[in-house]
Structure formats: C-alpha cells, structure tokens
Image: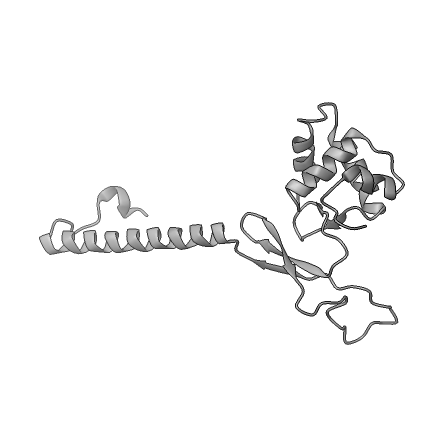
Length: 179
C-alpha cells in the first residue's frame, strides 16, 4: 500500500472503506502519535470531529485494523495501542515506569525471527517480541532520584555524627521511645 503516512483518503478507498472525517482524523492522529490507545486518540480527534465518541473511535480502529491499515499491539498491562507501521518485521520496547512505547527494528529481518522448539503442528507466521525497560526520561529520573536519596542518607549520617560528637543526643526522646 505504499507510504502509510500520506493521503489517508487514498488508503481508505484502496481498502474499500468510505472516506469519513472520523477515519481520516484517526489515521492522521495515529501518524502524529503512534502507539496511542483509543481514549488518547479520541481526545486528539475531538478537536477536528467534536461529535466523535470513544465507542466510535473503537469501532473505527477495529475497522481500520481489519482491513490492514493499522496494527494493534497489546503490551501486557496496557490497553490496546495502534500504529501505522506495517509490512515490516519490527518489535517494541515498553517503559516499565511510564508505558512509553517505541519501535525496535528486528535484527533478523524476515518474520518469524524466532523459531520455536516445537510448533505443535502450527505453521508459524510471526513472533511478537516486546522488550521491557526504562525509557531515557524515566532512567534519568531514576538516576536523579537515587542521587537525591544517597545525598539525603549521607546528610543524615553527617548530622547524626555531628550530634553524637557534641553529646547533644544521648537518649531517645520520650515521644519516640514507644516506637
């Protein structure tokens, strides 16, 4: 079908679907924010099609997926997400903290990129691989948070040491003795 990011109306017609404002707006929204879920897409589309409902978005997403204009991905613990990157063998990496999803090109190339030890009689067409980890923003936040925590622990230890050196805190205050 060629470049899926251009001319949504052409792709809709080629797929045998009517061109509607909702369908075009959804395809454009997914181009702008791939890996979005239905509720996010509904919010994005409502600026152009104010009367569209979440249920309508779900219906259109289903129709677009059925005719091959979208790919539905379902990372564990996440609502279904949609993308227009089709026709290649790529995988996804998901942030375990914020849920951000990014594409990862397959180093093998053709599908399926994994061969099961036993197919149980199945003819395997594809393997879905999802990598899990921290996105750069969450990794940086975790590093910064760890640095702050280490700093707080060090500051607390220094303060306790200074108090001990002065003999100011030789007994537990009565209010804390019961803990």
